[in-house]
Length: 575
Image 1 (cartoon, rainbow, N blue to C red):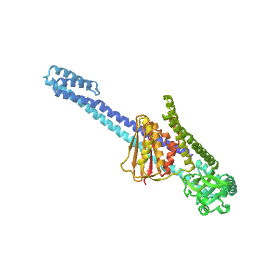
Image 2 (tube, rainbow, N blue to C red):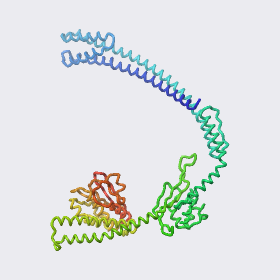
Image 3 (cartoon, rainbow, N blue to C red):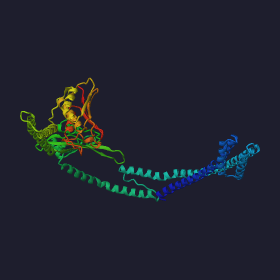
Image 4 (cartoon, rainbow, N blue to C red):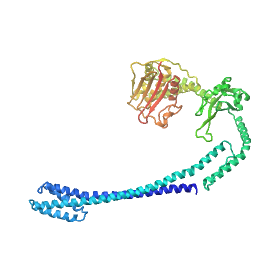
């Protein structure tokens, strides 16, 4: 019999027995439930009605409430007649009670009514006893059938438990041992099963595989050597430097480009520990400084400057861990690393050209813009001449545009300093109060124009911080300007200064429209502006602020929910 047929038969038989046991149990429980319901629904209710009628009689025949209670329960009893003789007694109670109402002093008639009620109660109590005995018999029958079917199910399950696993597990165990022999390159191992089932077919296929592995084992080495030569040729013809290391950090290969830029000979590098080479070669030392024996993830480093192709070139270093799952294992194992260098010199040259162009243009624009602003100031003086309302409006518009252009050129110049690495940070002990007062004063006119108040919350004593006062004031002014720009009219902007043990935190909170959560991670990216915003800007202010604060050893952060405003904060170390 096939394994599938065995499993289908065994599981199907168990399923059938469980279904039979379920049906028997459900049927008997249903019978018991119905019998219990009959007792409660019929006999118990009749006894309860009779009890209430007796209580009504005891309350007095002339009592109107007692009469109503008696009639109500008598009517219910007339609708609940279930036992033999109960109907006649119920009719007799109705007749006698009617006569009793006409002659309340007839004690004999009262006793007849009470006796009839008592007889109905007795009839129902006897019925309850009979039904209880019948329910007991039904319960005993149910217990017998459930026990019998459960015992049969247990015996069948026990038999399957003893026989079925061994019939399946023993051949698998033998096959597993044979596979381990094959894994150990013992290709003479064979498996013999007498069963004419799937295991027999599997044994035949296994023996065929072992025979073919034995035939191929002698020819595989030559093929592996050919593949090795092919891979080495591919690596040597790559335009980027590549260094391969094993799990012990020993050099497996270095392509020609890597040998050329490091200045080492192939014979000196192959099969040598990379750390040994790093002690004598500064460039190799730079390449492997992020290397560790267990590298969980790929590592990318900032571009490094290397003299190659007769000029200073830039390369992005990437350390890639090589991991495999060994045969027979379930967990990954690191077997080495590859150090890959990507030549990004053309991109760097274009970036430098772009940065220099922006710096030059921004610098050249500052002079005419400043001249325009000075001319506008002269126009506003009465000595030059009076301006009418339209002219004054035009002057104000030109003044705003000139100020906006001057701010943009300032941001572009700051960004070129950041990108070129020429930013100058003078970190000295500084007073936070002075920085805050300068920023508030710089944004005062813009806030007053929208009737926005600025409230400062700060402790009486604040320690000095290590900061570049000028650049930190620029950052806070930028945060306040943004808060004023995106806040509604007649609102309040809060500046909270919090002193902690090792840092001072400055937070600017507005009540504007806020920032959607999908843009929070991008808000400090260069040139990023929230889609759909109608406010002016280059998208550089927050990026420059982040560079300035982090260059001083601090950190900058934002918390915002759409519709509830934003809080931008930065923290600086205590002096």
